[in-house]
Image 1 (tube, rainbow, N blue to C red):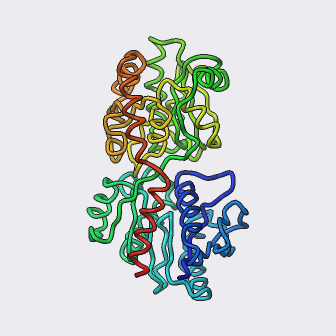
Image 2 (cartoon, rainbow, N blue to C red):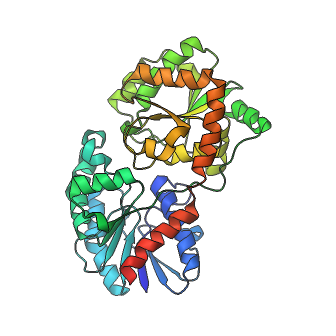
Image 3 (cartoon, one colour):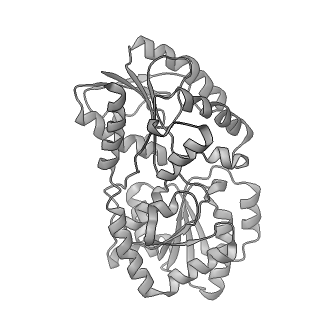
Length: 373
């Protein structure tokens, strides 16, 4: 079979959540199935890192998809022509974007529908594109893979997708993530927090990541714990009005550090050295940083929202993501109760063991096979 793959998020040095999903699953699938040809469709020059095996055929299709208008051109016009040219038997899209102008069977990985529930969190052009086209993609997809039972139920309720067309395949955790030794914890404190204990937040500076409320809650925590710091790891996408207001009103700015994106070894270091992960996103299809923190043996404070209780189970303390005082209270509980921290560490290590990329790749391939039969 000839399986065409939307590989536009395989960006060297710039892998984000969906890009990591694509990289970790496709690298395993291509090597495990040399009997098939995988046609990787890139929107810019590709990196050799992503040509995983001899059965991968890379194809560059301009223009680079940096704007919704370019999404439309790429998926509605360029992709159908390339699928015809290379006689593809299947089109796999790890980011959920499909084409309504092809008869080739399509499999979409839809990670979440945050844009349907919180459209104002996105710039106008993006939310218009997503809310116009994703319902159509859901209708034309032969199968849909999603990353949690929460997201499956959301797809069924929001788009009316038949349940038997949707497969749940949980995300995995990279092999690099593991608990830190005492020396590694001290080194991380030195690098990220000037030798002080710190909370870590991992997530792009996007409204739904709820970092604005975390900053306000942190201001309350630091009043009682003047030695604590907050380290925010992630790319700055949209510094919106809420974020600017929270930052301008922050009393303890000197206790907050923004690192930008970190590669996986340094992210593991930042997670492993933290007192706890604060992950307060009010809408997540899965929440990979939660699983990564659990694999590092780090307690988690998570929003009581969407998929997060499904992922973290009893290995996290939950709070109302819209209540700053509740967030601060949850952070304080984790910082002050050492017995609780120990129990959360053990529960997190046990729970995170089931989130492996090998299992994710097997689940995605099982869904692909349903279309190849």
